[in-house]
Image 1 (cartoon, rainbow, N blue to C red):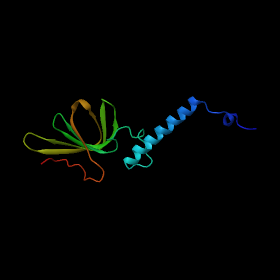
Image 2: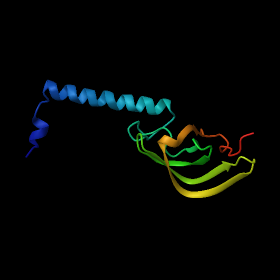
Image 3: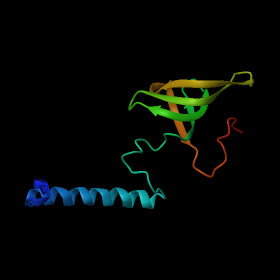
Length: 126
């Protein structure tokens, strides 16, 4: 017996859908190739900062440096293996390690991502 699905001819609508899927795949492959990626697709990478080291400056002048592991739209950033730095009015600089920290977006004044092949982000500003 033969498979009836193999014997059926594709309708023009089915062919159009197949062409669109192929074009979408080519577009994803092209974008991935231009970024130097081989197996990742654009759909897999939901945020360009995920998995990268970030320096986050807060409205109360604290600085948190850590690896971004989660991002919720207009919600919080979740940083892993972070270090918090605070400079007091008398010039004293203190820092503390944080295993996991959630940073609300409303307190963030600046964010910087460390690019690959660059030195780690410095905590202390000159």
